[in-house]
Length: 129
Image (cartoon, rainbow, N blue to C red; front, top):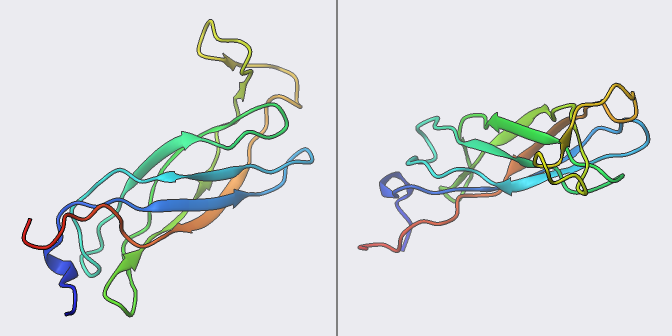
């Protein structure tokens, strides 16, 4: 039985991207988009936000909006993502103000670009739910 993707309620996507290298290191940008209603042919988008995976003793914040839904041959869809991670330095040992430190040290203040894509939609309710 073929799945009628056009009648599916809200869903999310897992996303993944590897950042560009800056000051000798990279970061992984991954997580899950926020839920929205949408199908493979309606050009919907998702918001996403998070912290890069830990490397070189710091993280970067990021947020973005995916590109529009790109249909797949099986009736599903995915989205492209791209952007720039914020250039603030976060010290995991400084918890007084959430770990965020703004520094004038060039090693601490830098950014990375990223480009990647989501997987197909996840979190759909079962048919006839």
